[in-house]
Image (tube, rainbow, N blue to C red; front, top):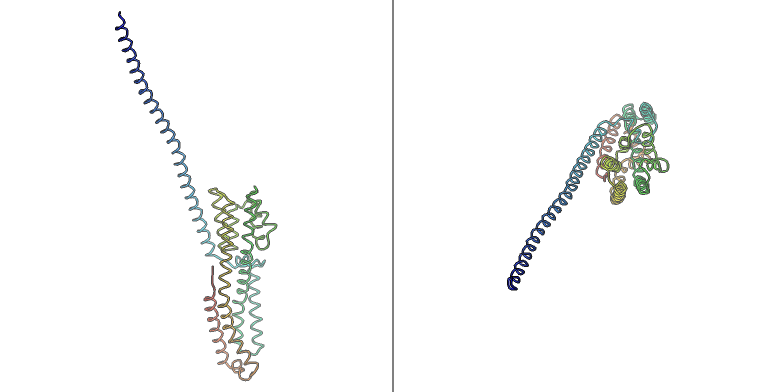
Length: 328
């Protein structure tokens, strides 16, 4: 075999090896590319699965929140339908049986009727005065006590929520935070939270205890607090952040209420002056010219005029009260 043949054979062998190497390179690269694509596909599927699961969890949580809100609304509607006298007395913070309240109302009516009769008025006017006193005055006093207690509760409720927030952030359970409020918070917040703590000792759940508080304190602030805790118990979440936001909202609500009351003081003062003018003028005329006013007290027509005037005065006071009662 001559040299030329060997060179040609070597060149052919090198060419064959180069072609085979290039073919293996392409085949191997395609295989690696396919493997890489397969890994990416598997990784994408693995990443998509948690996202789908997260969507399902969010959907479940949303449904649970809706069910919780629906249950709370139904319970609140039932509570509003049946407000007994005992519940009103409890809202006022008075330890009294309904029977005692009825007896006190009757006694107040009899005293008022006797006073009017001794003052020289006719039996009709004395009876009407006793009737109005028996059925109006005690309930007005009860409503006044309820509003005063609710106002005191709202003044301190945001501070109590802040105590729960700080306790939760420091690692205390919610029940321990409620116990802290039940022992150190001012009245009437302390009494209401004592009911929750004592109820939990005998098996009453937190949701039921909050419902009892809302029954005695039907306030928007208590309703918000009840919703936040109920949703957190069922769906989870950052309780301290939710209560912190609630506390901030309640404080802003309180500031807005104060601004509205300040802006409405002029209208309230005007209404008070207008409502007090007729009895004040009548008293001045009676003391300066008693003979001129005695006709109203000694004759039947005069008594009827007094009754009609009082009725119209009452209607006017109610209308003015409705006009200046800015609720927020």
